[in-house]
Image 1 (cartoon, chains in turn red, purple):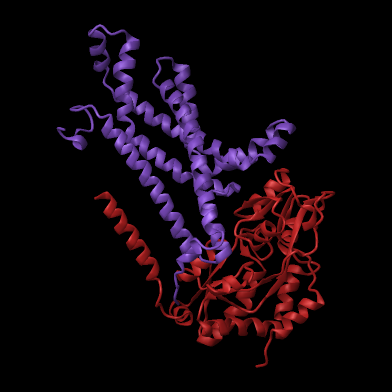
Image 2 (cartoon, rainbow over the protein chains, first blue to last red; image 1 turned 120 degrees about the vertical axis):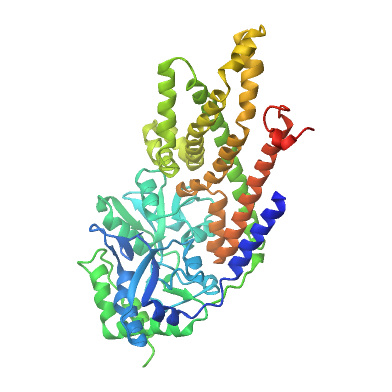
Length: 285
Length: 241
């Protein structure tokens, strides 16, 4: 009896999962609710984090607020509000497919395997994996991590690359940045790998930034995009138009300067190549 | 919006191997954690029923302190808090030998030990005093009365709540992923990373936890029936057989 009930419960659960489909498209959903719900992070400075004043801010959030929201409001002819929800690498795709959020705007790398599940906006930031180490550490780049204890973020592309390229490195994977940095500062691990820009952000926020070095060449290519439900090209078009207008008009550069400029949270000047790359993504009106 | 399920991601590539590794690690933490929890639980549970006040206070202090702080906090405590207190040589050794795993085992073991001790205390205290008096009046010594009457009955009484605690312990091993232990939930997330197929990975994890828990529950139910005292406890289950 118990067993057949269990089987029924499991079957029901699976059916509920398969039944998630056939909802209205995202623009209709936003039009009805008047709200764009984004999934973002609260511990990834300077893209999305909680600042000293307890506000949920960041470069990715600003991009949504100042480029995507205006484009949406224009398209739907009404003021659209923004609602933020916490997402993590393991939850962001389910959050989208279950309709809990409409857009993932954080530090999500656009990859081919992810594109089988979700669609991405154009690339809004380019970085690559590096290492955060203590000053004077023997870890200089990916060639020098054999046998070392390396912290990585669970569900990140960096961990995957290290596992494939340096199997002798001992990977310890943490769910978020603060735990990984805590392990690094207590010398539980020799280095922490993540996208270079995030490490720079972490270093800038550390109690003693001078103690830390972001080391090594990029050993991966991490183009950040905003993710959305698959096969919803009308919504995707609005998001992309928002981003393209911002890049073309200089709004993007202003937001970039606010976060990554000389006086920004994490000084990280836009390289000429990356600037050119962003501009090339803007198609004519 | 639509989501096309592709269950084959669970056995193609490395996924199958990861799931098996995850299950083994989960069972490993479970077994070691359960040993620690039972040992601490029996000692603390027994101490709380002793007639000597300081021993009771000591055991109560342990129970209340450990069961009233979230397990997640204990994970961080054993992983981030304890190693720096140890001598450098032991620290280095630990870092080379999977400190996250042992921190996870201790966090689970000590936390659930506090919970188990309450189950055991309740079992001992549930036996009426008259039972002991009756045993003594038949000519048994106190030790004999405890060994032959009180403890055997108490052990039978605690089977259902102990099953509950054991299942909780198994499921709580998943909290160890916060300190980087590659247990089952961790591996399901890993599959999600590689395949971007979250629903399939989570469903696989769910079903594996369910199967593990149902197995434990049915073993414990069997134990309960096997050792039931006819006419005394669990008569509803065994009937007049």
